[in-house]
Image (cartoon, rainbow, N blue to C red):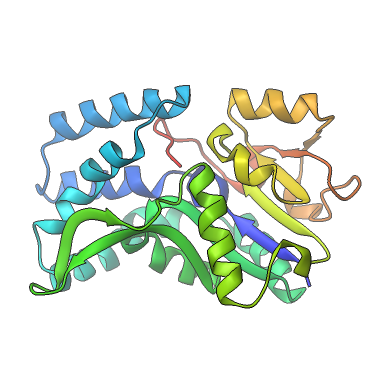
Length: 253
């Protein structure tokens, strides 16, 4: 059995689920456009530079969830899926996931974006496991508190969360013949260096340089070459045109 881990934003999705959620909330008049976009740009620049304070960002990201009852949020999420997410779930990405599932691989989405936003997306891809940042719940109100809980699924935190999840299944890294992690971001280098076969999907500049220094190569047609060529343990880079049909201006996680 193999292990297949997938980053979500700008990897499986041809866009960013957190950015799209913010745009959806703006369209509903739930958050102020100028404030939201100004903060989003600031956090994005920090993310690119590798200096993002994940707790500060999560306070910003999760705050709108605390201001509305869960039933209203769930109804909004269904609309958000139709308007913003399904259009950026490409057939190539679905085919990639399906190949791993058909092969009997253990599959999980591993994302820094909160699990309220990403849970239904992972299910829509047919991926049975999600390792996302957890939004804390106020038990008395039965609503989100606006704060994270547990270890955020970001940078080295992704390793901690994956290993905790594997342990809960009675597994560890050595349980698998091969392990894959697909990602677009240098912020995922800690987890990418943990698996046997890291795959750089439309990598940012830092990740592309790292992959190149490890003798990675560009796979022009990911949909037709799931074997991703090369020996086990090698670095591979996949052009976005293969998994994703468009690029968005804001990239996170």
